[in-house]
Length: 91
View 1 (tube, helix red, strand yellow):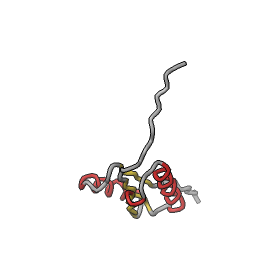
View 2: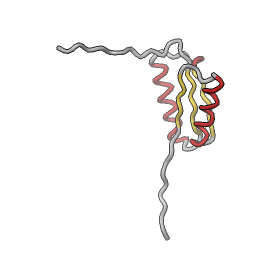
View 3: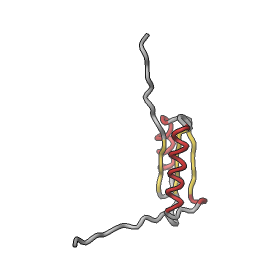
View 4: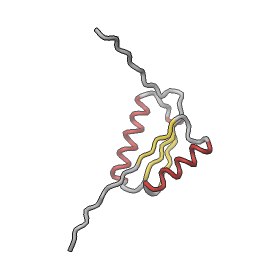
């Protein structure tokens, strides 16, 4: 029988920052809810989670960089956005 080593995921006592795009909200809101649910299930406290909303996916890395450079990103920075390729018909 092989030796099995498993990690234990714990978000307790950690601070999280989530940057989420408002564009394509029908997708990004579900991504946000999934991220919040995962953090809660692993012990993250509600008051240790900060959510920033930006207009679109283009602005996500801009804000993420600013938060990281200023030390306001917490222990983990989560970025959520959705780029959807549209369908273009030729007439």
